[in-house]
Image 1 (cartoon, rainbow, N blue to C red):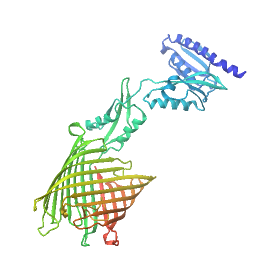
Image 2 (cartoon, helix red, strand yellow; image 1 turned 30 degrees about the vertical axis):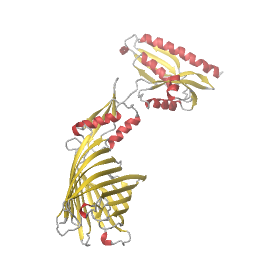
Image 3 (cartoon, rainbow, N blue to C red; image 1 turned 90 degrees about the vertical axis):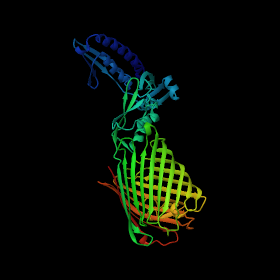
Image 4 (cartoon, helix red, strand yellow; image 1 turned 180 degrees about the vertical axis):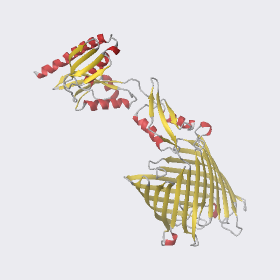
Amino acid sequence: MLQNERAVFPLLFAMRLLFAIIFLSFFALIPAQQREYWLTDVAGGQKTRVKDSLAAVKFLDSLAQNHYFFTELKAVKEDSLRTEIFYDKGEAFNKGFVQLADSVVQELKTEKEFFTKNLDSTKKDLNQKYIDRGYSFSRVKTRYTGMKEGLPKVELSVHKNRRRTIDGFVVKGYEKVPRRFTRNLEKEFKNRQYDDKNLIAINQSLQNHPFVTLERPPQTLFTRDSTQVFLFLQKRKVNSFDGMVGFGNDKTDKFTFNGTLNLQFRNIFNNFENVSLYWQRNPDKGQTFDLKADIPYLFQSNVGTSVNMNIFRQDSTFANVKMIPALYYNVSTRQKIGLRGTFETSSVLDSLYTQGVDYSRKGAGLWYHYTAPTDVELFLHRTHIRAEADLLSTDYTATKIRARQTRFFIFGEHNLNLRGNHYLNLKGETALLNSENELTTNELLRFGGWNSMRGFNEESLYADFYFYGNAEYRYLVNEQAFFDLFLQYGQLNNKTAQLKPQLFSFGIGFNFFLPIGLMSFQISNGNQFGNEIRFGDTKIHWGILTRF
């Protein structure tokens, strides 16, 4: 008997709802501002005020959309200024038998009929699938069709509205960014469908940008014909002073100190440009001076240029001067690929120095840089890759001999999160200088020190070929400090001196933020395999990186 009564309820509800629509539509002809409309739930006593009769009808319809399929209209009372509607919404059903509209089945390639224990979850999942397809304002409609086994049967359809795509970007806050910056974003994301996946991708591409930072997540302005993404940017403090002081013994076991200064001025003119000045002194009385200027967007294009001048002087024996102009293309904010020239001269300063000769060198080459930003502010980057290849021609002044040479360089570094606060820094570097003739000491490759083999003095290792690998365990104490423990292995080949030693280096360090910047302290030691470790070869490095 109860089953038969429930079967009649939907028909009664439909007839009463139709009567209510006709009845309320009549009162809609009366000016709305002079009449109050109230809906009262007779079971719970809850009262809801709406602005007019159409809003009242929408309210009653929304109950059915929220699984009150047996809502019953009890009475309507009205006077000259007030209309009061009494209803009983009955039992809510959040499970039942679902039948999808044919259009939904065709678009999503899914089954048409199924049973669900949670209608709310089913509708939410259905709506999200359409949002992921770019229909940001899609709406799932529910229509009651009857009862089956004591549970309602409902048909779900989707009102999609207009499919949304990203039509452009509007920069707010730091609005002096290069025009090319905005164009590159549009090139990457314009006309993509508007969904959470692409919004997250936009946020991630800017979250760790080297020159700008997001004050808040991207916001969206929807109009009838367009979808604009608003970016609230702030200029990042990227000028930096990087200083390091090291202590150790030189080749004669005399205690000396070495130092490094690296001053960078970046984005001063709001064009993402970079001017850097680098100076280094090693314990063996060698000094390096390096000046570099980089402009990434020439004439608002993705073509950039850089000029690098490098001077190295080894005490009073020889001096090398190198000029490297380059032209490159910004593949993305993380990748660059370019062409470069090399113009280098070397002069022997001491006539008694027989291991070097005067020469001049020129050539051309290709290079590639890739940098992925890090989520950990204490680390400089998550991934960094450099690859370079040059074809060179060297003229030797004294003998008037010309030799063809090739030079290769590859560097890679990656910070891997092992678990929680535990990280592993992996780094490797290799370089080769190949020549038709025998190389002299003043034209060999140099490495060693703070940024390579840390257990050795700065640029104290000479080779025509070398490689080394670094494994460094890092424990992140908090967002302000981390400990590290590292081990390095390397090998060099020096045909001139007929050396081919295998090298190792190890040490510990501590890095932490102070009000003046990032402080680094490291103790390291290194030697070649077969030699005993000596306490006197211990190197101590102390450095500070300040951004302003």
